[in-house]
Image (cartoon, rainbow, N blue to C red):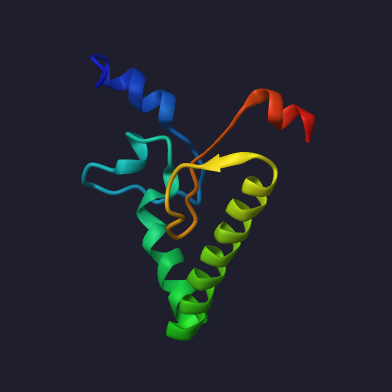
Length: 101
């Protein structure tokens, strides 16, 4: 990715007494996201706190909001280009119509 390893490491490096470095290749020295190693902890904490039914409610609620957002876009003259799945909509509006509403 980069011919000059030291330049890459220095560009992504952060210093602090609280940072624990590994003896092995440490991903946080090679990526812009120092927290990459700890992402699973956030997922575990969410699952632990919300539980199965809480996660179900969260996902269902996000999907309902996506359907609502798509319906409101359609009411304002946008065309929804896909079936709304989870929280993803693709919409296009005709510039003339969008500016008029």
